[in-house]
Image (cartoon, rainbow, N blue to C red):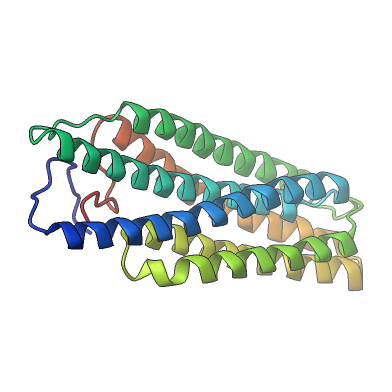
Length: 242
């Protein structure tokens, strides 16, 4: 996908088209905000459950969900920046300068979140190596309950963002993150079943290790995008004028 440098947009649409575009943006922004809030709440649940059940898979899953929250937050921030630029264009035709200060503050938060996911992944990998013997006590049934709740949260976010994925690159990126997290939740489900049915604690360590390895490139990608925005270079999937 070609990189897009944010700058002044050409006012080629009439007022009716602009109003319709703004209504559409508000509708999808609300959906993204709902998905962000629900995912953030479940992130706390999954992280707490990972500690209580002693599950590396849930810990890695919480890292993946944090990556989703970061991606959704970046998408929501992009909507806010686009709205600000539209307001500036209405009051000042010369408002083509890149006023990134509020956006950059949110990108700093996104960068910190990305670094946190990297830390979670590395921590889970280290713990997985320490559990190679498979003698750790892991609670399978609570893991399974949390995984079921996670699937419901992913399904709700999927439904909220699926329609917007066709018309907005911002929502499309968040939708892909939710889709990836669904795969992660299936991994948690598999680990929970193996632990509960066969008492295979090593399965939790193995699947948790695999999910942590998978989390690393996602985290580095989000961190790189945040840094590029902070340098006032648009990320590859950001189109402010769509």
